[in-house]
Length: 135
Length: 256
Image (tube, rainbow over all chains, first blue to last red; front, side):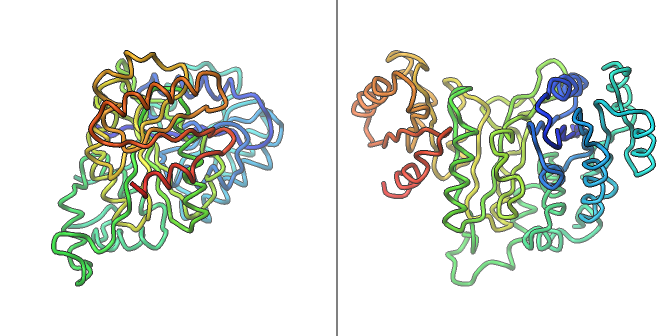
């Protein structure tokens, strides 16, 4: 059975990954394969990880306020790697005007603390699809 | 046959050999999902065989090293040390790390990469996390084609980290050229040691967390057990968190 593979990553320097871990677990419980990278990852390392793992999506968790630097950098690196089609979603402390801007740049969805885990799971189930592999 | 992007398998393999990670990842996904078998790979490889290679032997094949042992002994951290040491020696390294799937939902949280972060932007290292997808034995149902693929695209060393294993997950010994059993002090007494299973498949015992109390007692018990057996199995102590011991383990793997 083909399963959706999601890389959950924390770019930048903030040191709290409880939110990322909770989301990672929720996606696992939704039947997905979640690759968790740990804290303090560079955009370069996250993109390389997603490519190596054959990820169907990247989930970025940011609490540091550096999202307008780090998220566009991930998108740019994906583009440069010929992988602009890889869905990216974000969560964390992201003001609504920034969220809109990130969506304009190509982020599929931005979640905040107003969204429940069920919201995230429902969205992921409806949106993310496993890589096509022809038999 | 055609490949993932409509290209022949041989072309996609060539891209993967030349360092196209996305091509390799797609082939790995196909292998993982039963869509690329060992015979597909053999067929694609056949004309590339080196004329000087013995019949039936690929011209080039990486060394497959398996690592198994109970959960929490530091397998991932030690794998990271081994990767660093092989890289220092100029080898290209692939790592396959297996973690268990949830028996309830089939999902999986794959976290071995957390201990291997230092290699995440090294183009000479390829790391792939794999869910066991309900397979018992420490690997997954399609581990073999995934390993063959890594060997065929030219990695010199392929490290396979099993699901944290107990006393009977011995499948790794049948897919790896050499098997390391990683242990740490405090993991069971002499009776546990004498039980059949994981301990019997070791080519080298790695006693990790050598900075912790109890390491000497553990080495003593292992040595007593080895002396009862028919073959000599080296015992090496390591402290992976301080990056100590990888070179010694590689020496033990290659000298006996």
